[in-house]
Length: 337
Image (cartoon, rainbow, N blue to C red):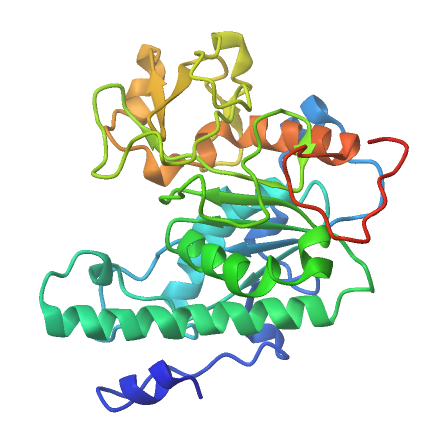
């Protein structure tokens, strides 16, 4: 049992610890019918069907446990599981099903309050809850890797609290291991703060065709900036796939994924990168009915779903590793590079 589990168990009984050898510990899994399997015909009509062997995605979902008596979510609570499946898997993780199966663990995530409490005692409890959540994600990832064929490549993806855990997974498990670092083709670290120099051995993707790099964006309305912004933070435009601050064109936007699973609102806004944030600007009136927000956090995937899907196919087909990534000492470049 991790130290955080044992300490927290003194505060209250922790929810049951997931056993990732069991299917019921997974929110998305190749042997399950789940939200990540959502079929979006318009996506395949636009980007085509991915050619080549399937590439699995390990996805860590965002905070869905907002109110409750405990610091950690009970992954076997029926309504919580429903939220994960219909919400995060259906609207976010499903973008990756066009390249292969999605694996997403249920994990005992920290309650939303943990991000906002100012009380020192509660902060300490929240940190321990947060660590327990990460330990679940780590064990799930190791199980995911254990059952893959030797040398199988993969994509890492996340949102919000999930991105906090994915960052730590990169720093502690993936990047220190040369084999895992080479097998991870892309990391989508969406909806959370990422510093440009946070990862040793993983550069920011700054070209639409790059692999072996990470992507990050936090979406905001035209006049709203979060507490943390500036040039030290990573951001890539999910329409131009660059971080140069040049605004996209309306025609660059292929459409948003709405809850019904349909493509809507193509060409309804432009975006630009600015001081570590993504500015969503010049919304057409119809879109403002649905997304009249200052903070577009909850739609970080939905707004750009079709662009992400199309570009993902392009990146994995081009297979052009980022030029500034460190290489293993015994690495031999291929003729394509």
